[in-house]
Image 1 (cartoon, helix red, strand yellow):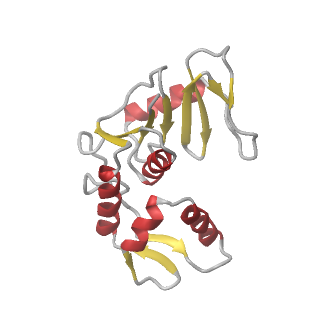
Image 2 (image 1 turned 30 degrees about the horizontal axis):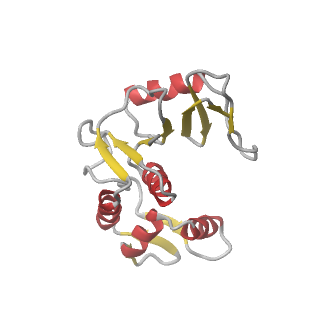
Length: 188
């Protein structure tokens, strides 16, 4: 069973990369350039639209700790940021175009990730879905997210994780910080 990721932003690209790193096949769905957003300027993946700063690199700060954990997981985003880094004081600051180019090339070169340039408007029951469409999601994806949320229980911080339940039909979706995971027979 392939894992499908909706959204080619930061969360979606990292999710697809981590799935592939674990030896699983993944389909990454990105609606651009088929459907544009008001903020994006390119069709590149993980395009930074608000800031070129990935926050503090000062040790013992929360942003540094998060990035350190991501580095230990062989993060695509942190490797791309390292290659695209520009001077920025204590912050991890990147050249936006170089960063997007690095992520897009890495995803395109990963044989376990299939990139589909299309808008997803429905989840199928025969796949595992990670919905990471972010704040610039289309109206159709927003409706998809809302419908998925109505059909599910929420996976809350500190919960034991996801358990398999065979008596549940249809996709089950777990949500935390605007990313959701949907899988047949899996719930929070």
